[in-house]
Image (tube, rainbow, N blue to C red; front, side):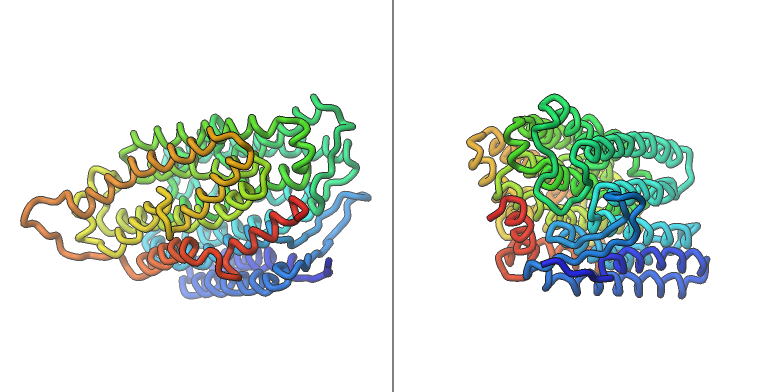
Length: 491
């Protein structure tokens, strides 16, 4: 059942207005914090208010403007869009609290928090886009809004990283625009409300090239190799920005776009007939393994996290490309699972840097005694990425493995097992160094980060456990993911 409702528009507008109010507040810290926290709460409330209806099969929609017949700016809240929006809204609130503490001594805080809010506005717009044009417009606005955050430090290194980020993401946007135009020419519509708007009448070769164009366009932000080069460079940004890039906005927008193209533009049956999705699965598998191998060689904490992100994001791409219900379920639920695990780690990296000044892995000996709660949260997230039962990561790997077995391609199960081993290889030594590699008889004094950094970190770590241990409880993200899968596969 479809219902016309203002809330699909209201959700991105709340974040948009917050951005302008923060800019207007300037360096008046109290008002800047008030608008940021208040808008995050209101935004989450608006998004969450639609969840019961979506779980019951209600589709909320709102058409803002029609430019020409069949092409307009419109919003639609289905299960997949609601999933992405809930993750983004929840983490915006948590990250805002963290950022208030982290950015206390930084310059240009009004600019930072203003664009921070605009990023969330564009992310919600992507989640609720009813058609490819709306998706493209918000996808490009996300690039523009994140650029000032990437270059926030204004150092030569930051400016170089910002230029690289723009080149990669804007070129990716060109491919998305090209794919959007061709899709409209062939299908006569850009809607994302169906399970496939294209058919074989466009020709096998043309459809293959169109799929490749979309994968390149969205694959840039999803950091599929070899389109990943911008992501490690962007680690010069402050920790809250890195958390935003890796867990909430940019990389998830790319992965979300691939899910939309796979299930809403092409559809499962067409992709099975074309036989091209298996090649995307191969590229995703290559990215999962190679990025993890590179992560092993990184001594800088945030760069190791960056290559871990590149690997983990391709879980979503792999799940989409396998074209089975269980694999798709694993892909969708990984949007939340990876988000909470990864943001926990970035919060830890930022807290350590702010409290101790340490940025490299080889500097972390004994840090578990100095910051036990912080490193406890890190340990939970690390176990999640390895895929230990009762953590969020186990749920992802369980369903992706079942989905791979559905296809009969056991090689992808091997890829997932290899990924778990590599995750253990580059995260367990950090845990060992933090808690066990300290001079005999020396016990450093406890010096945890400020509560604005510590509390969000612990909250996210708790979610990693809840998403794994209570995954089957009604109302948890897995139930919403199942609703999306039932629509895509017609069951």
